Length: 164
Length: 309
Image (cartoon, rainbow over all chains, first blue to last red; front, side, top):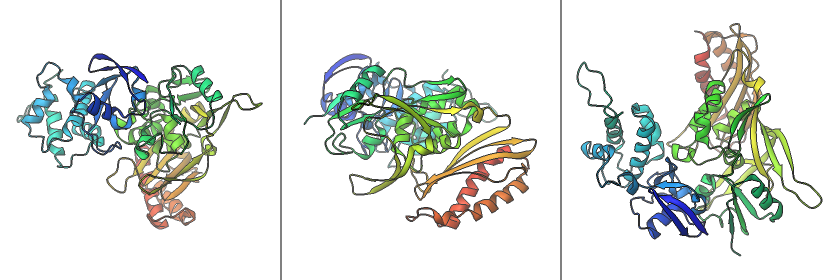
């Protein structure tokens, strides 16, 4: 089947089986290895990509469904070859342990921050509901996402938005 | 035999495929259930699938809109669409809350309303909330020998008739509601009557209890729709279900009870305590007594904001 879609801003025409899973195609055929394969059943979130700017599990999507869609992978969110504010903050907060879940979390975290520039911790935790971090580094991950939206709290000062 | 993937853009094309194809076609929208439980789809769900009709991108089947005397939810609207729809946020708290409690944000961005209903999980918050609103489902039956294609509407509760055991690839069995969907039937929309939504003093909520770390399997789901008028409970309908129990949809017989915490919750406790939960299917899980306490706790939590102290 010929699938016409957009990947990281580039128009694509792919001759592929419609039953091939999106994450398999990204990794095996296009060698975009940032999208990790964890559970392959929508539980761990490590394969999260954006479909029309919404985070989805690429393990639960077939290539046949990708027709006409705009897909963004972790390789597509920092095309200027520099870290995004969230990636920088992940480093600053030491939010990465083994790093396996991080590409998926970055996709979800970035999507959240684009929709809501100042999410509270509950909203961040709710958005991360579909991600499993086997190293249990959730606290620092939440800190990192919140850190992009807020400057550090100093005594007596209100939190100010860093990014508008 | 190879399996054909149909990805129509217009409803008429989809109807054409359904009318002309054999019964061995699978209709799917988001596919989050099918790919999750049957990783080798299309070989997984049944042998001999020779066509897959993807209706997830069909124009006109994903709209949520007000119609005459009712509010309609399109079959292929995503769960995340229900979560952000202004009308639902303002008027049908239970449906909005249920959409928010469904699975994970990533799955909500793909899963369709029809897929959630067709799969028939006992622990689906959205099904419970729609049942509390006495929602109606509209299905298109395909053309067959000497029968023209036609559409039928019926109460969502009557959409399910018995129990279905799904055998999962790793040997586990999953018990779901069995729907009345035929092989080439297509869910068109679900609608809720406006008189159930816009009654003065009406309230609704959806609560679920998750027994373990799981985003997909709340143990017990409770949804209530009711009316509080002049400080008394005028009407309340309860829907409760879960993997350990059948779907229960009944009116809570507390009409005329003061909407005051001490009075209402005492009577509610007595109602739940006397409810014969031992008649429900029991494959492990909590005892009847524990179930009644869980149901009471969830209703109490949901009702609290609407009841005076």
